[in-house]
Length: 253
Image (tube, rainbow, N blue to C red; front, side):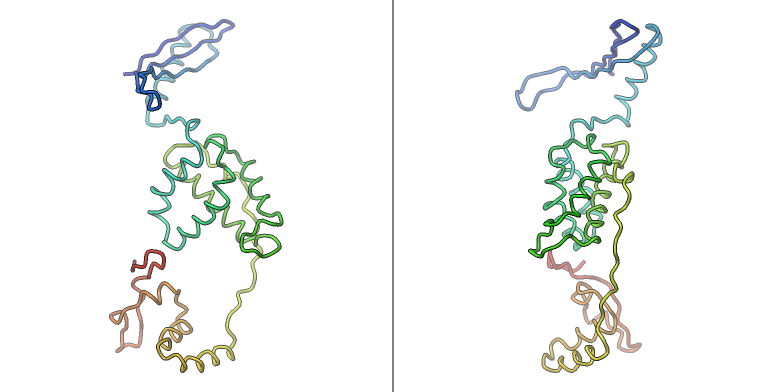
């Protein structure tokens, strides 16, 4: 059980100390004491001891954590990716998230600890994405607004998980206004283009079924690649989407 002490420091200031036992420093191999300190204002020793009891409960209780020791990069790589992203995101979404994380998010926050990141850091990061020269595809101009919003979503996902496992008390992304997305009208095939596509498919017979299914059903590429003969109901003229093909791991999911 943790032991606590109070020490007067003058001018109604008291130092609270909790002894949590000893530990071995992994870098030096030396045995060290694990102590926590806190300075408070109290009118007397009795009030200071009451605050000490609260401090002990906070430190030894389930809600205690030390975010000052957790670097953003370490959290993303050791906590968020293996325990959240890989388990909760669809394979394609995971790969898309990782591209943004590796190329922009980690470099931007690599020197900050989790508890240091405030709404201002998020705003500055998003503002920077709006600058010219942020594209990585070799094209000129700015990033599409939808891409900037995508980074916002990823950061929100990261900090939501950090809050969920009590690494931080508040998600700084939630205090930042969502980037405005300028939606563009979706481009679809015209009747003439569809007719031309169907006419051209006769030149590649092995693609005929896939092309027709894509046009008629609007299935995703991964869903089309995941189809098997057992998914076709020939009596009722229907097809059932039961699985998709993970193009990254090359397996059905």
